[in-house]
Amino acid sequence: MTMSRNERGLSRRAFLGLGATAAMAAGAAGLAGCSPQASSDAASAGASDAGAAGGPSFLTGPSPIAESDIKETVEADIVIVGAGLSGISAARAAVESGAKNIVVVEKATTWQYRSNQVGCIGGKIQEDLGIHIDKNAAVGQIMKECGYRPNQRILNLWADNSGEAFDWFLAASEGQYVVEAESDTYDGKSMSVRKMHWPHPAEANIADDFYPIFDDCQICLPDNGPYIQNMVDICEKAGVQFLYSTFARQLVRPDNAGRVEGVIVEDENGDYKKITASKAVLLATGDYASNAEMMSYYVPWSDRFMSIFPNVDAKGEKTNTGDGQQMGMWIGAKMEDGPHAPMTHHLGGPLGMDAFLLVDINGERFMNEDVGGQPFQNQLSRLPKKTAWQIFDSKWKDQIKYMDTGHGNVNWYVESGADVPNGSYGKNAYISDEDNEDGNTPGFLSYFEGEKALGVTANSIAELAKLMEVDEAALTATIERYNELAAAGNDEDFGKRADRLFPVEEGPFYAYPLTDTVILVNMGGLQTDVDFNVMDTEDEVIEGLYAVGNAQGGRFLVDYPLPAPGISHGMALTHGMLVGRILAQL
Picture 1 (cartoon, rainbow, N blue to C red):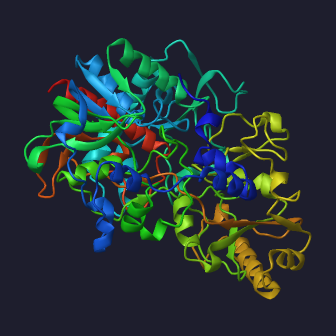
Picture 2 (cartoon, rainbow, N blue to C red):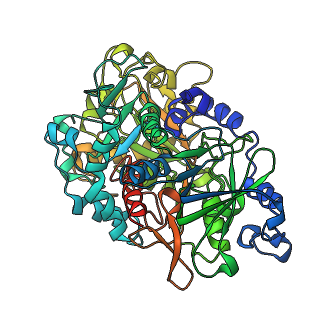
């Protein structure tokens, strides 16, 4: 049984679509009980308090759980820790490849998922639309945006196999979904697969993008849930055993040498079980963004971001607390070198991350605005008061079709909210003056009208500056200079391309404040080889231990890259499929 989207909580994309004021209220409610689970979990497993010695407690392993405390031993060939997209994909691929006696451990009350986007290169949907993605260009751009720190061979596994993986994903739901255009009407319930942000406006000219974005992302409506349910059904019918409300506490590796022999788990009643794994333990436990101690240790520049991860365990705590990374390190596994990559890409204001003029609280321009949400957030983090204003004039409806077509961009204005597609989890490519039918895409006017509206509008720049509470002379000078550059068709100051350099000259004028975004997950995992074997601190394989999904390192570093929207889910699916096939051959 799947949970509804509301039962699972807000996705990051739906959260940002609420508008800043409503989002803050929703986020505050969602953070109740969000203390890092690591402390309570470690205590229940007998962990010592390493914090007293000055280091982070999670780096010190707990005392081994005594054999006398183990109430039951379960024998398995393969144990998968984590029933999210990567773990379920691995279980399905393994059982379809002939594996037997698979146990999947999940600390939530059921299997986990979020969002509706999956990124891949190739596959039937893209082929039917005539979309061809240069895999080397896509992977190369990811490498660039991650400072060339990822393991390109691991990225290539996604690029080479994700088209097949997405077709395989959909095959489990054959006959239950339809393939439609993004602009088609949607009833909010049926299964519909659509190409995200497709087609592009002819005026967008994406070939000249400063930050290339590839057309790899599909939207699975109503969300990924029913599609994953069908994969779970395949697993259960084949005999895969799912243990829900079950917390993995320690890996079994005697004296931290030799192979990993299994995992010790704890049920809701506090009883311990040992699950032996004659072939392998696969860690598919997710990231650690909801573990405050790990965030402060690995990414202190990002520990201020509000976590909006929606999934919770059987005790009501967020599930992405770095359990797999910690258990791995306790038995000698190597956490990948950083900088780890927080997923903090901004989705902008009413017009998303479209390349309109940006100024700081002093009314001064500070960057080339034609970038994605992660580069923008990086700049925003360094601005006074971490605040910027997006400014445009009355011609915006005719200008958005020239903007980029990626995650966070708005490209189409339509007259009625009924013509804005339902089911969006991101910044919808379509916008109207009024809200759309399902409420996921606020209307343009809602950002500027009403008590909760944060945007301001005026018929003169002087009045706009007053409402923004910025220096009138500074803002006037900035806009005059910007208009000069636009008229010349040459951005001498910051290098923005001419066809996205629109003057701010015809009222009414609009300004919307952009402040810190939120965090969904944080990318940083255990180091593996290309066959998903976890490595130890001496770069040797730990026999019997594998990692996939956000528990695996080598994929994203420094920043979460935006060239391939949906790639996080795409990798979870693809790598899960691949490692499942590997485990079946053991």
